[in-house]
Length: 262
Image (cartoon, rainbow, N blue to C red; front, side, top):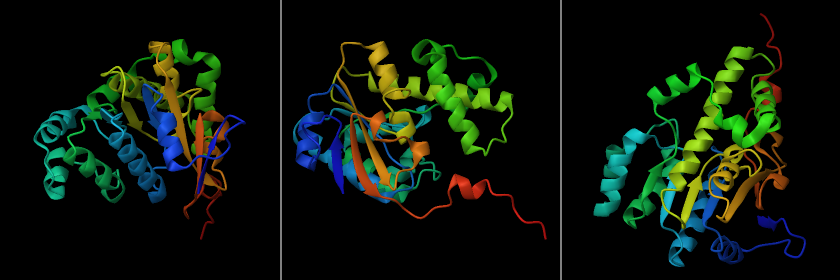
C-alpha cells in the first residue's frame, strides 16, 4: 500500500510523512469505503499518529447522529474504557459495522478525545427531504449538484424518479454541510471520518469548510481501492490519495443487470 501526494515533487508518502503533512492543516478529512476494513485500520493509524504529535483535538464521524452526542461527551470526559459499555451508552447503529468503527471509537473515548456527531437526525431528514435546500447550490453551483445527480442515477441503475433524486440530493448536501459545521466546533485539530464521496474536495465537506472559513487549511485524504472504484472518486479529487487493495463485493454493474425470470 502506498500514498500518493498530488504534487509532482512528492509522489510517495509513508505514514510518518502523511502525519507530518496533515499537521499543517486546521481540518483533516479522512475518506473511506465504508465496508473496507483496511481503510478503517489506516484511519486509526493516522488518528493515533496525529494524537501522539499533539495535533488531534476532535473527531467528527459521519456514523454518529445528534442523539448520541450527550453520551459521547460524557464518555470522553470520564475516559470510559469498557468496550461493551461504550457500545451500549452510544446506542450504536449496527448499520455501521462495529467491527470496523468500534476500535476507533473505543480508542478515542479511552484517550478522552471528543467525538462529534456529523450526521442528521431522523426528524431533520424528514424536514430536509420535504423542503428545497439552497446551501448546495450556493456552495457547489449547478455543476457540482449535477455531479451528485449523476452519481445518484448511476447508483440506482438509472431507475430513479426526479422527485426521489431531488430528495436524496437534498440529504447529501445537508449531510456535507452538517459535517463541516461539526468540524468547525473548534478552530484547528479537527478530523472527520466519512465516505470518500463526502471527502471529495470539489463537491464534499472540504468544499464547505473552505467556503465557510476561507482562511482555514483543509487537507482531504482519500483511501482508494485499486482497481479504482469510479463511483467513490479518483485520486484527482483529493489532496492525498492512499491506494489500498479492494474487497469482493457486488458492483453497481452487477446490480443493474436484469434478473432472469423463472
